[in-house]
Image 1 (cartoon, helix red, strand yellow):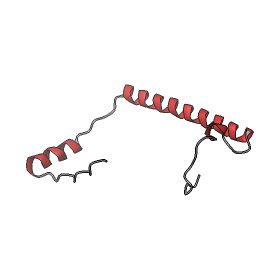
Image 2 (image 1 turned 90 degrees about the horizontal axis):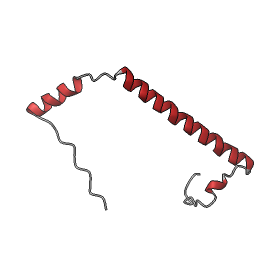
Image 3 (image 1 turned 30 degrees about the vertical axis):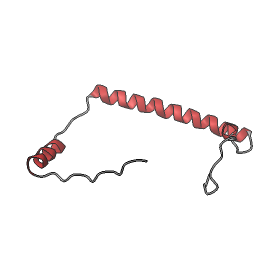
Image 4 (image 1 turned 180 degrees about the horizontal axis):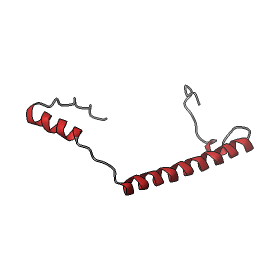
Length: 80
């Protein structure tokens, strides 16, 4: 069984000042890092869209049911 989550500590004095200073620092993204992040996002988005297109095609071919998930049993109170 999981342990309960501890309460977030309250910062005082020098710790609080350091925390506030750290939060106000700007850490700009380099153009290379931004380009890499956007490229990765586009790759992921394309893979997701391709997968959804295949899923919709399977459902259309099988009367609205995706045969890949035929063996999955959903809970009775599920809205799926």
